Structure formats: C-alpha cells, structure tokens
Length: 99
Image (cartoon, rainbow, N blue to C red; front, side):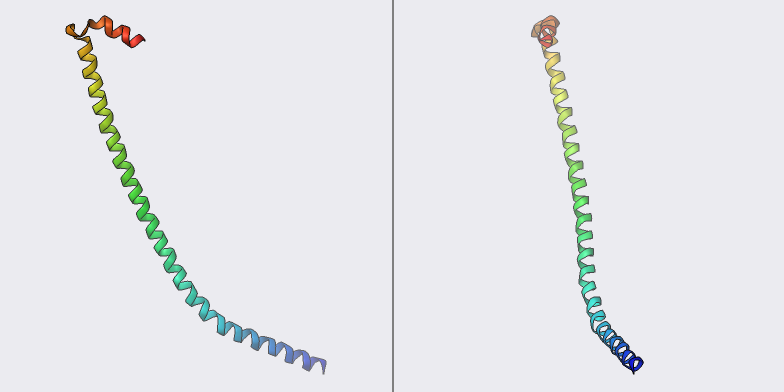
C-alpha cells in the first residue's frame, strides 16, 4: 500500500513538473527575444558612440596641432622682430628672456 501511494505521488509530481515546463518555457523564449534586440541595439549604439568620440578626438588633436603651429610662427616672428637692429638688438632680447 505504501509503495502504491509513493508511486502515485511521484507520478503526480512528474505530471506537475511537465505541465509547468510546457507552460513556462515558451514564455521564457518570448522574453529572450526582446532582450536580445535591446542588447544588439545597445552594442550598435556604443560602437557608433565610440566611433564618434574617436572622430571628435582626432579633430581636436588636429586643431590643437594647427593652433600650436600658428603660435610657434607668431612667437618666431616676434623673436625675429625683437632681435632685428631696429627692435632694440639681441642684448635686450636676451635680458628679457632671463627675467
């Protein structure tokens, strides 16, 4: 009698587990699809952002190089003007640079 009762309980437990499995697995698959779409969208967005940031960084670097070249040219011109005979001579330029 005990064996029969235990067998029935095991059978009912197996049927319940199978029913839960059949009911929940399709829902889980449906829920995974939107999550995968969100992940794909996030990946694409992050890649686009990284490319945009790299391009912006390159533009800033190029602009900084151009500006530093302009400043170097202006400084060179200023040094040449101060070291010219009419600009006070090279001695005054050396005295100013030591200060």
